Image (cartoon, rainbow, N blue to C red; front, top):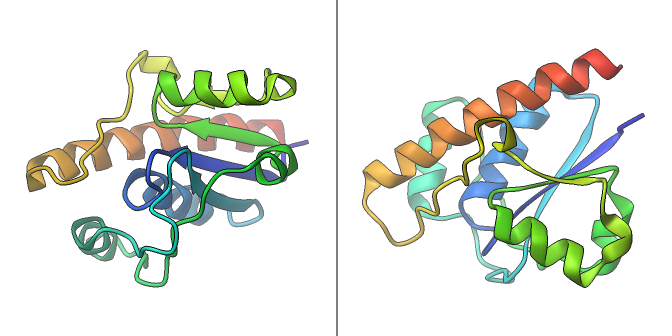
Length: 145
């Protein structure tokens, strides 16, 4: 049974914190955390993603970026990445994790766009992609309980 989910993106300041907040709201019984493959360690969430989160009833203002490491990855029951490249990076660094690492939007066969340092419209698109992926995973995880 899946009890913990780790959301992973690059810097852990935009996509994975938003995905973690959305999944935690959908399935509060899960432990949901986030980390980055190349995290901006110690940084807060990007101001634009904080604003988008607030508009959707979520709080990211206390988020602190964390680097993905072996112990964090191994402790999670399920790891969801924003891109196929991130999934491959995790599986190449820790081959034993194969089978519990998936791309958030695998069903659509798309990567979640990286909005960092881009126009607000890219943040909005990334949010829509994340929300869609979370919706699908929420249904799947709820059905397994």
